[in-house]
Image 1 (cartoon, rainbow, N blue to C red):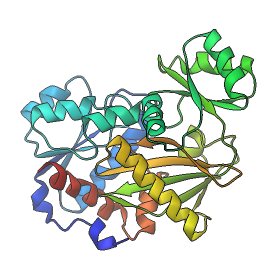
Image 2 (image 1 turned 180 degrees about the vertical axis):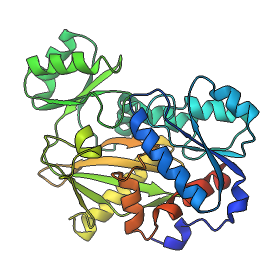
Image 3 (image 1 turned 180 degrees about the horizontal axis):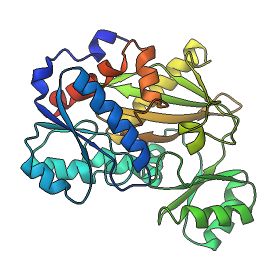
Length: 316
């Protein structure tokens, strides 16, 4: 990996006036506020003419009335990571960071992403969509237990639960349905979890995750102090290379641009299983992409400048 290729080679004046979009109305608003504050501070410290917009009902008016040369999207979840914000910015003629409309919409839909991966022969756990008690009963019979239940269009592990029987599955489905009309259940993969960030077409060092929680949930991601982040990840060189190549294929299948983060499990036999891809990963002090970038030789400021530079290379 070439650290110099990852870094921005552009003068800060090339970025023009940058709007950092954060906050929004999704269930991940609080995380986005923290991510946005960190990104905005880093850009301003680097000398970029950047200002923040807490995305609300007046966004379209702000986009049309403010002088904006490009946007740095730090909106997590629906309304920012699902293609809708990307579409609005394209209509307004404002270049933006990260993936385009199609890749953003696809990656936000965990079920559709898994279907694309499956169609290309990429490994992802067996799964089913839930919309009724009958679906829960059928999924339990076909997939076995334990299982993991997820809202199909949420991030940050919101609404997720591990279940051990049909009764728990029905309860978890009902809870997840409060967050999303589409709920996904998939086989539980027992083994270590890894997360792999990509930046400007390069795969960053793999991070191994460890938590005393039953899985890497919201608390483990953002609040707990006992979550373990392993860099090096604990895999031997061949297995880490295999995982990085799988990440490349997974991102290519979805159409990722700029930056992203892929979450993967490894089973007892050593096989890897793709869980999901995040097109606007967290940028808080607990976040994983900054950790991976640091391991690759980039500090936080260099990371945000690299993401911003890609918006010029990809969209002018």
